[in-house]
Length: 480
Image (cartoon, rainbow, N blue to C red; front, side):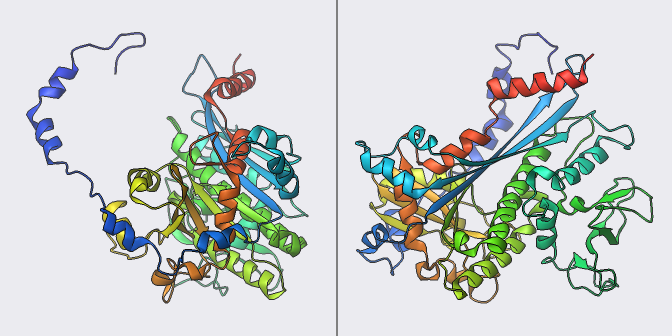
């Protein structure tokens, strides 16, 4: 690494460019497989008839659209010690009233509605900001920044800011944790879930299977009470927090960059916050929930250490939807818009080979051939440990393509899931999903949907000036 202010060499790249090992390596790297027109034709579902998009135009449209997005930023808190960092995570939710939106749409002379006009309708907006310590930042009573990070995460889950009808974000984590089976067969815990309720005291508890203290890491069955959400490891005596279940602390470092840890935390928080609200609507007003269309920025998938919670979300969402339908309500719509990544790149490369007005579920065999490499486990279900929604390619018009992800209409991935997940008839609200996309497509951003643009507008922490302002805010509390 050069010294601060030392300019780089203008010729050092020549040594790299002429290195025979590098040239040999580059020559051995194969090009990615590229599909032909016949491969695309084979993907188009047989049940999609010529009148499918006409049906979509007359499909049910939700009365409200809820969109959620998140962002994170790592701020430098001390100019004298630039290695000291603090993280900020922001989650934003927007609810659009379609009746008011349609009023703007009907008077608009352009093909697509201006999101700036829609922004004037925003009355129901929720923003949550979560602080997290970074490197060289710790509370006086804690052993390290690593412990302070874990404690602060628990405090965020018990924040009054995110409390809904008496329920904390930790309550939602508890509901999800109850669906995850204990792996330890020698457990003396009678309840078959990792989290449960004591039969005698009626107190809720979490189960942690490994001490998070890095010098201990003993495996076992550690019971952590819901209140106060803290227990002591019987081996090392250090604290175990209820939110250690998420394992987002594992990549955290006491003395380096923690952008990765903050990103993983933000990814998990987006999905748990969304569940927090959907579960709240289900408890308090099922009719309102049935009239909502949810659009998440990104796929319905959790990556990294907290990925196991995707299965809980899939199971509980299915129970909620079945309950709504059984009581005579509409099926709630939950979907994600994929803006970046391999699927989007692949879609851009084949869009001219696809007809207009077509909806294609991505089959695993096609994905493993042309998009993603198959993992070492040889599992035929893509995203078996991360995804709770199915990827679709939707082309509404020339140069109008969207990669969307729709909630699996199943409680789990058992049985004939591999085949059913790519059949359009499995998705009872598929026409409504397409109508939502066609309603909100906008020419403001490539392949953008208005609700996601608005949610991102509220959630995004830009490097300038937003990030700089967080740097200044943080320094006010850390610098002399």
